[in-house]
Length: 213
Picture 1 (tube, rainbow, N blue to C red):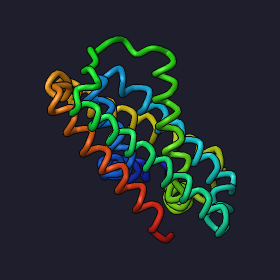
Picture 2: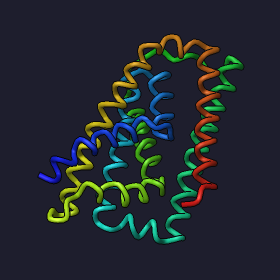
Picture 3: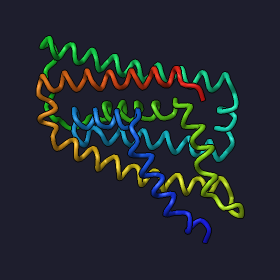
């Protein structure tokens, strides 16, 4: 009964977390605007797979070791920052090519398996290489796990619920953005979107690099 009583607060917390700006939101918005709804689905699934892995690592105690280890925390922080900056630079390059007319505006074609897996991997790495996720998971889930229930199994169930809720929220967001996809893919608008999203991703990467625990 304690777990059921805590579920409404858990759901509210998940939606507030999902709606907060960050790397996940930036990736999803960019992908939905330029690749449409189907193009955004693998990114969302990759992000949520990374989140679920972190939740299980937190329940198993590994995330606490990462958070406590200066070296492990630094390695993850640098790796996560570098990956975000690389994504941002790639977006800047796409904007530059678009302005020079060297990049054609792609039609909204079906997402190939290779592109889908690449987008999934992009989301997965962004989430998994975020040391803040480890700290967050350690602090977040124990608040909702009753003392008389098994930590790992209960955390796994709560994390699965969070994945379902966040996936629904992000897919709804992607669908809304994708409706204006034709406008976003106009040459001038696309170039500006790539430049802005690149700046956001690089800014987020620099923030991850310089922010302490």
